[in-house]
Image 1 (tube, rainbow, N blue to C red):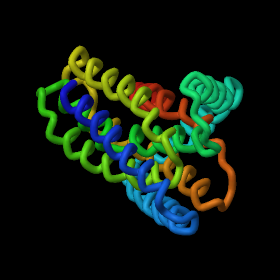
Image 2 (tube, rainbow, N blue to C red):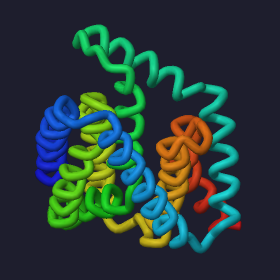
Image 3 (cartoon, rainbow, N blue to C red):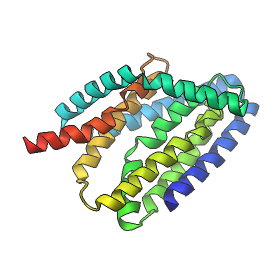
Image 4 (cartoon, helix red, strand yellow):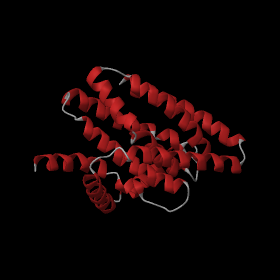
Amino acid sequence: MFGTIVNVITIIIGTSIGVLFKRKLPEKIIHIIFQSLGLFTLFFGIAMSLKSENYLVIVFSLALGAILGQLIDIEKHITNLSEKIKKRAKIDSSTFNEGLITAFLLFCTGPMTILGAIDEGLRSNSELLLTKAVLDGFASIALASALGIGVGVAIIPLFIYQSAITLAAIFLGNFLPENLIIEISAIGGILLIGMAINMLEIKNIKVINILPAIVIMPVLSYLVSIF
């Protein structure tokens, strides 16, 4: 868990710096920072998604994931939860929810998250997660300067998510094929594209409601491999 713990610490430090910057930077500078981050998120998402080799599974996973997520209305539950956190912590921020959701998707759906956590679980090698920690630290500065302290709260789902993958890797050993990891990362990339569209204010997409696709995809891949 060493890599994940360091990752959490760098995000806390980055968020703290970003919040301090937000208080000193004019609104137009914060806006252009957020737009530039949106462009990078779009680029990063496209790069991740293009690695997929099984488009049919990706399409069905996204469709089924969207249906399931919409029926459950994950976004509503997360928004309600973040509102409770805001009230408990007495945080006055109109961008708190957006910061939390954006940071979660950016920090948790990339290939370094999955590959790094698996590598730490299988070989006790934290190198990839430590590299991710540095990148996330700098990204959190930019995000927090635009969206505020909600970015830092994303460490809670990040810690749970990365720790769960690491523990799963310890128990599953080498049963996770590399192509499956690539396909999961591809779906993560598509979700990042959706988030980038939101960040660039092109259209409002309920990206968080499509998250079940990440869980559905391995199941569909397994069924396809059997038949």
